Image (cartoon, rainbow, N blue to C red):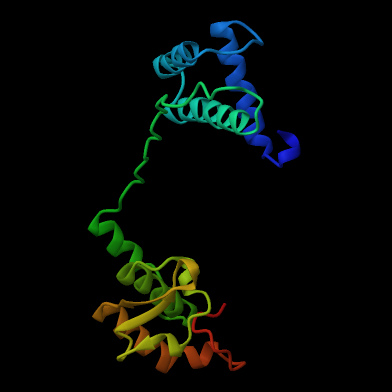
Length: 193
């Protein structure tokens, strides 16, 4: 498997999963479908493992046995049909409305960098932009008095996203009053250091 340029983490996971499997069914011999199912039941029942560990333990063996069958190392993939563990989706904590307002009010509007930061935050908040979406934004990426912003998504697909009136108001002021002060070298990018 190492020659196939499999990642080190995958190899380690396969070894750990096989050690666990062999501890249940007996070391270094061909595994039956029933024994593979017994292994999966054992993994699911472990209370000392997180769901992500259980997921990796089953997924690693499923990948290994699929690969071994495909390359003729084994006559059958004993893990076919064995259900894995669903990864737990961890929902990040959410800010309250008051916390978000407090965050948006943090930039110091008595400085040009404070105005830049305020516009960045308002755009991200109003349009759901990622920090990578903001990189390289220029005046050409805005339409209708800053009420629309163009971003490049996955696969270089363009999308026009709406901008709230509040964010558009801050952008208009920033571009007319603040940006010329920051942009002493004539760059196209709106958000300069």
